[in-house]
Length: 166
Image (tube, rainbow, N blue to C red):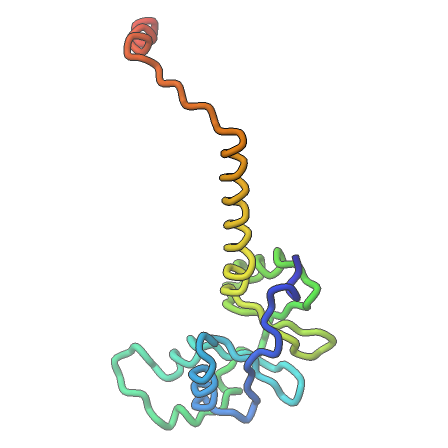
C-alpha cells in the first residue's frame, strides 16, 4: 500500500503572511487538524503544529497568554526543515519516518507542490486498525473451520513422579 491510498488530499494550509491567531482559527474551524503546512505561493516552506502554538503561547504554564503573541507571523514559529513524502512512497517508509523523526504528520509533495498530508492518525485509522480487524476476522474464521485442540493438563500424579526423578 502507498501513501496516496490513505493521505488526506488538499489539506488545510496557511500562508507565510498568516499569524498565530490565523493558525488557531484554521485549526478550530477544521476540527481534528493539528498540523498546518505553510505555503509561500504554491511552495511548501514549513509546517506548524498545535504543540508549536502551545509552546510559543505558554499554554499550560499557568500564566495568561500575552495577546501580542497572537499577532506573531507563522514564519517565526514554524518548523522550516520539513520532512516530506511523495504519493508513491510506501506506508512502511512513512511509518519509519514517523518513528525515527518523532513526527505527527508528513506533508505529501509531488513535483514540488503540496498534494496532501499523512498523519499518524491516518496510518492507524485508515490502515493499521482495518488490517488488524481483517486479520482478527480471518483468524476467527479459521478457528471455526479448524478449531485448536484443547490443551492437555498433566494430572497431579505425573507431576509428582517427574519431581522425584529430578
